[in-house]
Length: 278
Image (cartoon, rainbow, N blue to C red; front, side, top):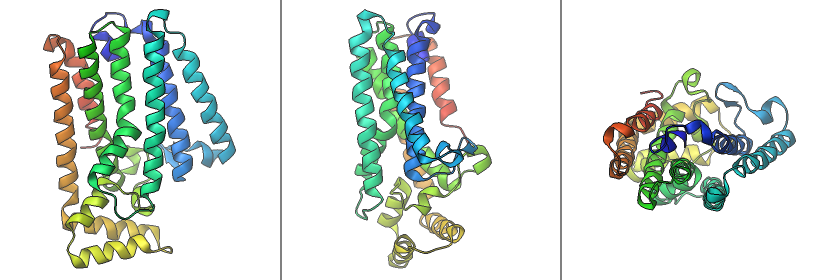
């Protein structure tokens, strides 16, 4: 948000409270996400529900959501309505995306298109909201604000695809989360959906066997499914899909009617996001 604002105005610190609102909201979603996923680690630390308990994680998250609105309400009157509308719509979309994510765990017919729409709602719209909100607060044109929204959205898709990839192939010490959680919980990621689509009969039967097992040794399941991904070539396809959305995002940023030199910092930030562990 601050980098987007800084495209047009020189003092991004003036919107620090609004930026903190989005950061607080983002961490609220992670708190509840970890609880729903029963995740033990986040950023290399114990998750709140693990260190304390489920009720404290729920209450802490609820308080963070209220704090996010409190901080956002400090926006000047000129921008307040547009900012609140954008934020509220985004928050509702993220809840919808999370619901799809949970429902997909119990479906074996999820398509790639459904998955992409789910991660757009669950992850991408928050990045899109941040870039657009920065533009709105800086009085950018409606066209620029929309292109920055699409930039954030496409980068968000690439980022979530990368997150799913690192859940299988990352280093837990670098990634900050336990590796293989998506495989253990049968999350319908791009990789699992694509593996089913491209598997031969033998590979598909083995995938189905692991997914349908209710009792298994976690490390064995992760190793077996990862091996199948490697055989099918899902790792390469996932990287190609990441790169596609990353390039799409850069095209939307290019369409913003400002000199390319002014966009370098925002572009560099996106590049950093996409190179967490490559």
